[in-house]
Amino acid sequence: MRRIDMNFPRAGKLPAAALSLVLAAGGAFAAVVAHRALSSFPPATVRLANPNEGPSRNTYAPIVKKALPSVVNISSSRVVRTPAGFSGQMDPMFRQFFGEDFGGRFNIPKERREQSLGSGVIVSPNGYILTNNHVIDGATDIRVTMGDKREFKAVLVGSDAKTDVALLKVDAADLPAITVGDSSKVQVGDVVLAMGNPFGVGQTVTMGIVSATGRGGLGIEDYEDFIQTDAPINPGNSGGALVNDRGELVGINTAIISRAGGSQGVGFAVPSGLAHQVMDDLLKDGKVTRAYLGIVPQNVTPAIARSFGAKQNRGALVGDVSPNSPAQRAGVQTGDIILEVNGKTVEDSNQLRNGISMMRPGSTVQLKVLRNGSERELTAKLDAFPDKTTQAKLGKEGPHSALDGVTTENLDAGARAQLRLPANTQGVVVTGVDAASKAAESGLQPGDVIQQANHKPVKNTEDLANALKNSANPNLLLVNRHGMTLFVAV
Image (cartoon, rainbow, N blue to C red; front, side, top):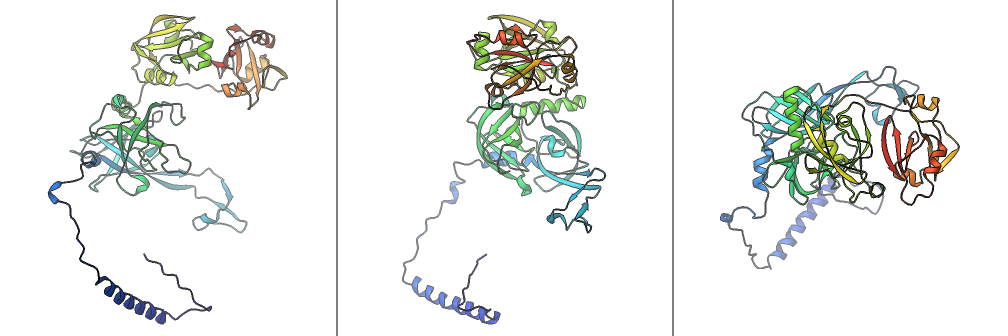
């Protein structure tokens, strides 16, 4: 569309007929001038490509042609119920949709239908499709549109919110299923293509590299082992395919980190190995059953490594051992650093947690742990993961200070009841942490109960003060948080 801005010397409008005449006359005059000017130039010589040379040698077209037919568009809808009696100030942009009384108040309809768009990947010719749980979560109607424009109604086989993976089934046969690759072989620097339906515009392919593997601790899902990529991923790409340079599925596009809501080069995909295992569990049992060791693992920071005499900042520190758990039966103790599982090095707590969770309950694992400076081997038989949660409330403020920026008080019966701790729990409760203090930076929180300081038991504030005297290394605290213990190096 071309825009023409006209400036007239006086206010008022030129009649439409006159304006059309001026534009037409001007166009005719310009054409005559252009013809006369061009007639003085020699003929142009254009070199055309040889049609027999084929496509560009630097292309991903064969990969896209192989994998893209396996990527589908998913539209889902759900009914959202508004809480009874909900009302509020009317936003002007919603006035055309909702009724408003003379007082400027409004009532939202009790039920309304929400729709969402996403992507999916055909992983079996007989109609099984992997996508994200958040794409279809709570949906009452799921529709799948193939690359050839065929549309099917999909049935939810099962989903796992902890990994954000869902499995759909459509009544179709001979579908173009993708080849599932080995995501454990993905390396930083590998070229990958992200395929999906961003913003509902249709099938789209973007290219980038693998920026990182094993990403966790982001707070996106409960179990995180993401492949990070800079291949542009946008809303609507969720559930789509991340493929390697052979057109094999190595990940399910899941999330982005963005300040503006669009791609900023930090996207995450669930590894295909994890998604495939979730799919197998859903087909077999209708749910994902995770194995359970019974510990609270922590990363080994440089400060913690020095406190425990560890040579390297790797492994998973055992902050707590659950009673009657596989770990307790195997002899694992609080303060152990798990270095290996079944001969494989443990880099951090996230790797250990994910690795154990995806094992089968009843399986046996060999653990190499560091305890008091020496290594030892332990054997544990894993249980099924128990489904339980524990919550705690903060303790009351107290005047005593034993750490810079931290206030504490003795743990009494009232504080134990408020924090839902057993009556025999001993320690000092943290009642306040200065946000600018090193303790806050280390992760100490109000409500934490300090039970050890520098490997010495703490029963009261005097014990804490004595244990912190003349400490050369960072102070190592064993704290009870929400009924579980963990180490904090301050």
